[in-house]
Length: 426
Image (cartoon, rainbow, N blue to C red):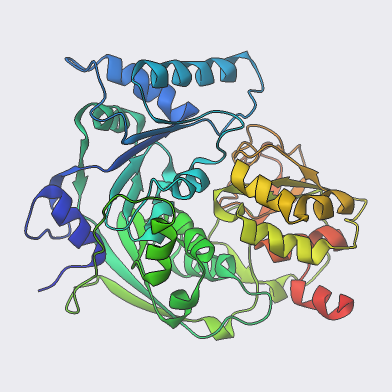
């Protein structure tokens, strides 16, 4: 009996010929990640570990300041200072301060810190993003991160795998975000709990790297331990442009055993939207039967803060103005994305349309900084979660959608099918 892609990677990192779902293993890690929030707890726990004076490998740890950037009060400034001092003390090479990085899950692939076949853990639930590159990547608690800092290994229970198969060409204004929202709606927020989601099919084969990132990122929204794509020529080319270190490309065996196989006809999809207050409360945009005005449109996050996303938004907003009844906040995913958007004239287009463009960071997504919602406000967002209180007030409402749907809604002042807007403005 063969192994799935996740099992192949875990077996190699555990030094085993094979592993099976439910087995507890110790596995060596290739990279350990923390942001200023998770790092604060992890550093304290590291200092309490008997005999832990130095991290296992200062080149295999990444620390990224991205949740409160720039710091919004003395407390968040202290968190950033703590991480900066730890990075200097431990000679950690991959420390990304304000103005030198951006959102952790955007920055690490950009900097060549993620490669196929690797095992990556991080103090953030969306660490699963790196499955887009054929790596096993998962979020962990800060105490587990501290142990990984010291030992360079973690314990894991091998997850069973769910095989998702996507076929068909996406229709107009249907993007990877729509496909993944449909996936989360199909599985449910706990439908893949402690499972690996393995993505297959002609649709994902044609997806850009950015599209794969979006889908791997939201595996956790279905409860998954990780989401993972097979690395193909597109993936390998992306990685080799950013690093020259060797890596191993794994593939699932032809006789691998999956807990479930689920097929989705992408050609039949229209733009999708997650209604409050759960990421699996997903409906086709045609289910929005009446006017739903919004107070804020947010574009960015580790899900959709990439240059490809900003291009889509700029194309829709070019020469137009956002509705006077709302505000649009745009957070590029990284300094590199920000600079590229500037070079391409995207920032000029967004600002001319009436958008506020922020420093790269993820504060608005979790209601911490630069985009929080007030009582009774409604937001349509490219982020990945819409739980009660997620972006600020527990009395606010959050709808999740693609950058195209968000941009169309920004012009109309209400939740809008981007296909309709395109027909009107073409």
